[in-house]
Length: 439
Image (cartoon, rainbow, N blue to C red; front, side, top):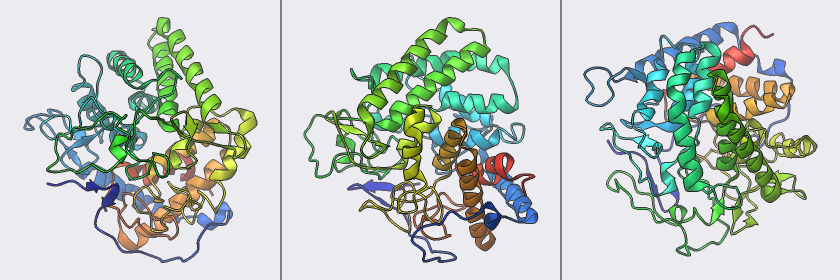
């Protein structure tokens, strides 16, 4: 089965239809009561999401590679790293019914001696992408996922088992992708935000990036200039995710009495936070930017808000930074939060995958980041408005989608149906954390 093809920096997937076509070009900050969802619909959505996720369980003794049943992202016959980590964000509430720990173990079981874990493996258990290129690296969220499971079902023995894998994987990423300025470089597609341009406007391939050797060109074309832009830049999102990884590892180390490791994680965390704030913050704009050749690339995208979940943003910068998030002319659209802001030329009102679409993992990341900073009101508004929009689409379709449109209450124009998958975050995790029992 062929996967979606990434050709000449454009993502080509079947174009879907639009629902409840609201023509508004932004979203006013309405009161929470205007986004109420009836309890009967909440319950129906929850049960439907759980049923879809259960249908996606695969693997087991008869599988030639994946010998234990696991809950799958169900995007293709391959398994996916950051999808699986975000599935943990809702499967944590149903660990007996949804074998999410086994899904995480699939990645530990394929880790190479140097700590490399690919972001995607085939049904044969082979890496889809070459280790030498950063396209093989997804947001490093395995420790985050383990702590999600532990938060609902504490399991000290599991943390002791997985900790050596997490530690080795962390050090592999540090060695391979951290540069002398203490920031990390990455790949556009590997970052998980497939078609967001990461290179400077007008950039031409200078041959200084790590060259991609595609292992499976017959099923996935990734060419153009995107895969040539990597070592020349620095990524706010990957750098923040690595800070979060270190912080999560320190937490796990304390839980399992490996305190000897904590100081090194703390030192790494502090160095990374300092570097992001030193090099990537633009005080005139009140925003963080990726770098290219040591200079800021003046392009906003949802990846910058990983600084919230990682605790990177100093308090004296927080309000100015959040003004971009809550601005209807930028990220806070009809359905918040747009993956790409409306004040940039590539923005698509229909979504066009990561050029505007609303995604469960990034919305959940923003919600959790806001809560970390004690911003309960905007976190709750975001959770409730997003939940309401997904419910409105569900009423018409009786299912959930890979992503949603920013400027209409509809599925994204490049979006798969029956996606639980990480969209299960909305009817299950957001329900538990922001909807259940609320009036």
